[in-house]
Amino acid sequence: MGTDRPRRRPERPRPNEVTDVIPAVEEDELAELDALDDEAFEELDEDVTGDPVADIDPDDEPEERGYRLTAAGTPDRWSVVAAWASRFGRAAAVRWAPLSASVGGGLALCLSYPPTGWWWAAFVGLALIGWVLTRRSTTLAGGFGYGFLFGLAFYIPLLPWISGLVGAVPWLALAAMEALFCGLFGLAAVLVRRLPGWPLWFAALWVTQEWLKSTVPFGGFPWGVLGFGQTNGPLLALARLGGAPLVSLAVALVGFSATLLAYEIVQWWHHGHKPGFPAPAVMLPGLSITVVLLATALLWPQVRHSGTGAGDEQTVTAAAVQGNVPRLGLEFNAQRRAVLDNHVKQTLQLADDVRAGRAPQPMFVVWPENASDIDPLANADAAAQITAAADAIGAPILVGTVTKADGYTADNPVATNTVIVWDPEHGPGERHDKKIVQPFGEYLPWRSFFKHLSSYADRAGYFVPGEGNGVVHAAGVPIGVTTCWEVIFDRAARESVLSGAQVLTVPTNNATFDENMSAQQLAFGKLRAVEHDRYLVVAGTTGISAVIAPDGRELARTDFFQPAHLDMQIRLKSDVTPATEWGPALQVVLVTIGFGALLAAILHNGGFVQRMLRRRTGEGPRR
Image (cartoon, rainbow, N blue to C red):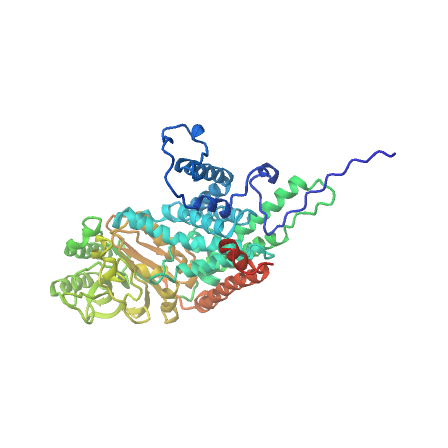
């Protein structure tokens, strides 16, 4: 009788690279744990009928109560609570790694934006959430939950400046609403992770959710788009080619490729010594990162050259005035005349500097949004003040003001947020009426509904959107105007440039916010300058005012909450970039790819809808 040879321990199968990414713990360590899915928790949702038996004391020790039953066979209330708490604790214990990674990823992504500006942190944040969403144990519901948690960790520290205006509740509500889009991304990512080359589809889905959040509700809220966190990094050059959507795609592709690359390396490190274990599949993530870096390297010299200028471009001098406000907060409008006086005073000081040879003569001057909240078209005294300032400086002033709109009544005081070109000789001329007005600030959607929910609703204005192409002419220079809120939307600056604008301006009023918000808004201006190859002049009532070159560099900048003026030479540019001309088409392509990946995943995963129905209701076809 021969001796039985010991059986060879089977090789651990190579994990599926598109579904298993760096498991938090080995599977054999969880072998004794029950599967903590929705079915397990549904056992706790059964109705408890009848009252607990009389001899059950809520002060008893849990060990004494245990999971006792009443005479009718109904579990007592405290046992149900204990069972629920036990299962919840076990679920949290098993999920501590993905929960921590989701929160850490959101915080890391926030650090890529001003005021911190660690642009590279975006890659870390996306790599972490990519790992969470590609774990085999992450379900569709889990993908939404982890994505939502990631979004909360990102938006709550990104948007605290809102609380200074309306309190903590609207700030947290807005953060939660924006986090829902991250949750939708998480759900969609879990759905498509089985497709080959998942980092590509994850990146397209991220751009898709950014497009969605920038569109709905109430016109969208692009704050937090990945591209605007890269204004201090090398990937900013990609904005010249495809605007913010392409920059976001590149950041997401690098981050998610890093997840897959790390997974392959870790698996090879642990199992590469085993016979027959394949080499790490680093081709896709490595190629993706290489393409992004190569495109950046090719574009950056061109972007840098445009920032230093060319010999055949006309040079002009532009000025920005930051007059400051009497005090921060919503009450600043109560001192509207003081705000106007401050900007007149600062313009007169600039005129003194010009006469003394301390500053060059500007061709035009940019005042901030709401520099004159007194309508100079209806108030002769305000008009006289502005005319005096324009006479002193000897140049037209772009005056930010508020004018009555058609249909104005005492009960419906509709107005336009307007920038008027005020010439020293001819007075008011061309104007830009803000076309994209801010919901819940400049106007209140569904006013009859929201005014019953919060007293802050009464603080919203009655502004109506204007018309036009966003271009005004001052001293013969075609100037693109994107007033404050408008600069965060792709279409505003693009329309101005396509309509002939040779320089961009951003009159803004951040008196009701703080310096962090102004720094974040300035990042939008930097990306617009690179995207459209234009110099950009920012004028803020309280700051931050700046002059930005077409390569995104700050040529001059003021301090926050300090009266100041900027006066420097810029170049007028007329070339149209690929991003300006083809940006919307590129975004359509990327969004189409995102939805196409979802459709492909549904077909690839075949029958998941039926399985979900069967799991929830016990109905539906069985296979």
